[in-house]
Length: 421
View: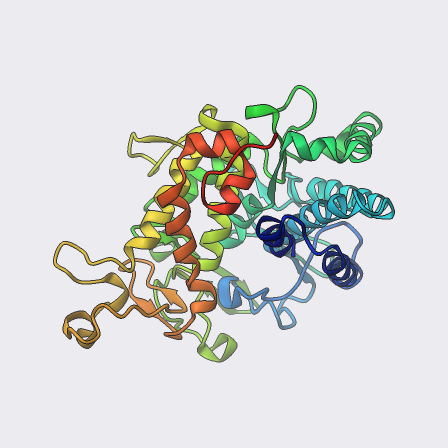
């Protein structure tokens, strides 16, 4: 919703506040439903079922578990943290016109702090695994025992996406909110232990702040796995499941029956969700786009001060803008002719590879083979795979210096603009 509002601001000089208020009310109802129905113990960790990731887990996450009990889901909890960040941003925007929304923005600050603290617990019962340096779903058995389900998947990458940079001009519009966070930090410092450091003494490039679920140490450890070509980093983007599970499947036994997750770069080999469920290795454009967004947010905060090896083990060090661009380039490679003139997207389909009437007509497939980039599933999934056009535009027009200078608005527009006066 904030995206649509910002679009209208850029096009017409002002946004539709009535639309934004209406959307905020609807989103508030949806958020309340999640809090009341998907956090069964009131601990600020969430379930949610398959959440569009279908068979990514060891169990069918939309069905009763064979063990009894329930799942605390890292992806669902991270999504709720990002939901809070979006609602804070909308609430602050509305409060400039109607002060009643300021209190609602503060409500979402408190939700975010509680969710962050719960999600970032380590120890035996937390989603964060200190030994592995990764987030996992937690299985809660009927007797209260907690077991991490150590499937190295997109579920553990999505906490990176709950990241939002705060520009100095935004802080000027939210003095009550900043004061509220500082008051919470003074009275209840444990609430901020899970979040990325923020506030006075922790400002980034151009005095920017940041609200992020993952702290710098954990960010570096998760990126080490994500950028490993033997794990998530494919020549064509970020895989939904680590390739390490090709030779090392994850198994969980319940009453003599094995539940197993193995890396499958293409279609599923199980009957879960009718057999049409393919999140155990392929590349999906929407979650890649969310990861790229997060990397750009972190870059706006860190600039060149934070670099990582990309690919892991290569000896090449990149800032996070360069990492985001590298992932976008790999996604783009799916559609471009290779050295032999063949497009990875069309795999072994000779009609599309060699027929002059078809070879330059691109299809936007639902998902892509995790190793060779071939298009799979529905062939006209433009609704989300079409985001590749936006990625090409962003990285074709913007450079890291421009983004650091002009901030979020430059990244949003995908083109340089005159700085605020």
